[in-house]
Length: 373
Image (cartoon, rainbow, N blue to C red; front, side):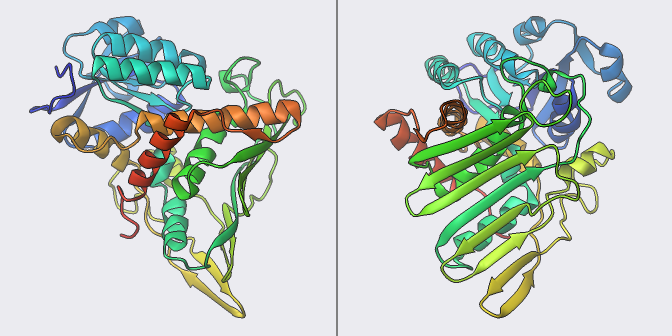
């Protein structure tokens, strides 16, 4: 295998750690759909579940055994949030390239530790910020980049759902890394940073609203960019849904009602690349004075994350999500949590060097995937 980031000349053998919701729904089908990647083994405590979907799959009951396997090049960590850092650390120390599901880590300290370790070991480290390749985000991003509504003054991004019944799963139990902010906040923050870079300060509010809920199921954050405000919202009690994006600018406004369909398609058993994959029938609505018109949504394709990983390992292309970008996301996630606890505005706790490196990487990401079909 490749120990120090040199180009790989053969198929990249992937070991997936975890076969819960994320591993089963996203990682396994996306990896299997990308040329140059081979899903070679899965670590899971439920081999029956894995083999029902992948009858010929090699299943390890112990993540450490998979990490130690000589024939695995890339480890994908898709386990509960509190295990991300220790499993990623073990894989990096084993000389493996690593993809970590979001959130990258539990806090900024862990993120710094993993970034430094991967740099010393000379391996690729990336984070699965797959929502960069959603149809709704690509559509709104293209319109903002083209200046459709002028300079953006107010940007609103919502992941609002209606799930009034509390479920018995780790995301909804009391514990570090649980709750809606850790679940959906990293997606919201990453997309905001892709559009606008790092904010100056943040405000935050978290709440527990559903009967029987044990951890936050409502989150609200405001990112301060001088005169611009970015509002990020997630809730489990929004029947009928809300606008996915609302954007106001100096020349007009625009809204995107519905979210990307890829998660829904994967849950229905659609394979990435099948007809209608990633297509979005919900248009962008643009308001320019008295003029109201529709703009077709771009298609999404989360395979592009793993295509980027394959290209980075095979030919030295840019990592699709640099670890410094994921570290910046964790800095904002932490700051919002601190702001919610203190009830005050909080600065982003990055050093000057970290902020400069993050802004450089974020700027590069803005040009690393297409604005249009």
